[in-house]
Length: 311
Ligand code: G3H
Ligand code: 13P
Ligand code: ZN
Image (cartoon, rainbow, N blue to C red; front, side):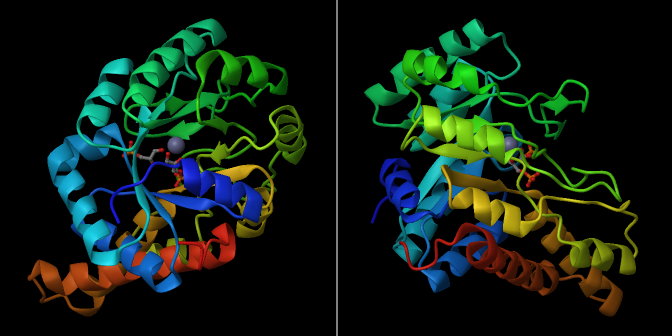
């Protein structure tokens, strides 16, 4: 098995009423934790790399680690650029062996988003690479993108057909109430997703794969664990797992998860040092941290994605 694009994965996911997990990767332990979970669950995978991850670990290191994961597991794995900001980063990732890229033109006007996305699609498709576009703006913070609640806006379903037709994108990320990071809803606020918008989009684009970003559930027991062992995270509320499972049964074929992995890893490292203050060999705390990533990914494969046994 070599790296795959998202085409076949999404076709089967759409028909089967499940979604593929797109997990953000930054180092070897994260990649191993995710792929060990997927191997045990026989699940297809998308490993995604942000601009910040490329800056942190370097493209070539992440690429080689992901190739090692494919060799080690034999799983169908797509390697995807998360939130490509401009044509150049998409080109660099395509030339550097990624099988899928996201061009996030959501901060531009509708017409400029179309023009930029089409330019990436033309380049990517000539090299058999798949492309994810985005319409609508999610709130929240990533390394290079910071959208305030006031600037966030739901996807307008009346725009999706023209966008897909004019750009030729292979999948579309939409904004229906998810947001990036650990603080998606205020404590006491009831999490809600706009299933009416999702269903309207699905009616307009039958069979077309939809993507949800900002889909961590910010599992409360992990926030508590971080704080129990010296952390100071404010109360955080994410997207309930059952809502994501419902979306995966509709047109959503890719669900992006990063914050829950960060939380699991950090909780584990904090717990380890609280219990073993004398340790200083990184393997002593990175082994349980990798196991925590694995357990979190298994939980997502089963509770949210429904893709166990689909590899
Ligand atoms: O949505 C973005 C991901 O969580 C990646 O975050 O840009 O801090 O690597 P990052
Ligand atoms: P979370 O911050 O909810 O994990 O979202 C990650 C994401 O959308 C990556 O693109
Ligand atoms: Zn995202």
